[in-house]
Length: 213
Image (cartoon, rainbow, N blue to C red):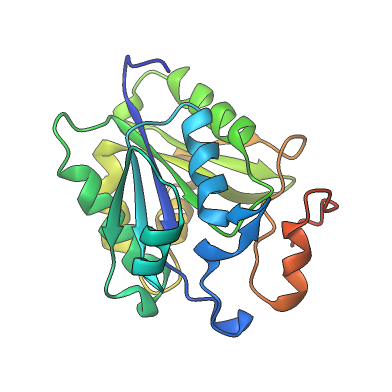
């Protein structure tokens, strides 16, 4: 991993899977292991470190079941309020690290089709710019902007301030669209997420690419 300008990884893994009948997304089985392990591996293999993982629903079970070495696990007691609360918790945790990383790649636990290749491509685009601290890079799939997203540390406070309920960083990215570098990842990743029982097919190792629009 290139340590010149450290890029951290932030995994939002607090969801309770309300539309999945209350099955926490972090614990969904993927390749015989909890899905959260796959998502962490994608960040690590894509060039991110340190790694912070925000937990919420079934946090203690995730801690006991998943193997997450070298990850800082952040509890978000406000996870039922939505993704925004987890994003704020994760960014606050990263801001307390010394030395502070220059940027962070944000990923979601319920996107098994997003792997290390997409993370690495987003990181490379940010490193190619002039200022990692102010970088704003998003993966793109056709005309759709989606995860992974890289945000420079100089922007974390603004992102946290605009995050609310299930919006995450969406509002901030929309307000700064002209400053956002879009990186096409449609050839290497699929951002389809797992929300309902029919989406569980995405957990099959040979699941067809079925990007949600």
